Image (cartoon, rainbow, N blue to C red; front, side):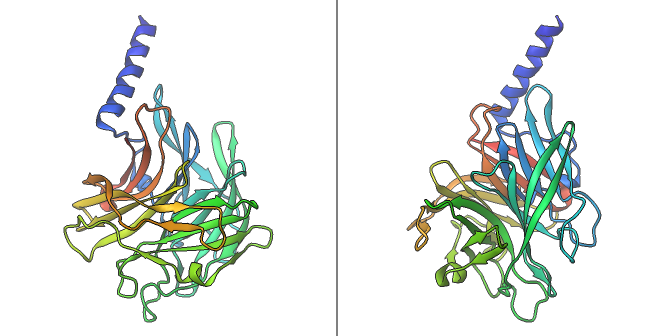
Length: 319
């Protein structure tokens, strides 16, 4: 009887996730307001949270996906951030490094009054029932004054994606959200990341960037973020989430759309689509992270993380 009941519960859980395409982590508190996410393996995702430098709390977690026991978030401990500015502040994006086991880059949104604006290289370690991460190095990001020269805030980098060239050089895409007086549209920049010297190598066009205007389904034209998360799939397509908020309690709206694709070419690593179309519209949630689906939940093509301001956040699958 116990075996039949357990199997029934498991089947019901999978069916529920498949039908409504939505799963909520067990410890769904404000810490689950996900600002960036990438896949570790078929059963887990690394997520970052946008706590500011003066705020206490976990800045990273591992979201474990197990239909038999539920979906839960495990905090990731970092003892030493290896930088004079201390713990990560306003972490908004993360990407897994290709061909490196359990190594990731996580990025702050940008500089604030001359501080922060860092790209952290870390290695994730699973120590039995808990996780910790070792910071292997730190890269200083340039300041692009996305909000204008009179604003103490620097850029609004909200998306990060990584891929390798044919020579195994690491290219990093930076997605800026847009919506400011200086940059009304989203922006994709790219650079080679040298992890032996911990520096970025920019081309002129890569540093200038290419504007991206998300497909227009918004209630108001000046409140949307054209890029709030980036993801490169197995076919080298670049996917993004865009979002809008009409207040700290919503309503929220989001979309998933394809920007283009990447190729192993240092001169032109990004091919942008001529026209952008909505792949999936998501009403009621402010998506700030996107990654690949999981085999644990049949029918899932993407996973998203939401940051719904005062309403907290959630992890969900999309078909």
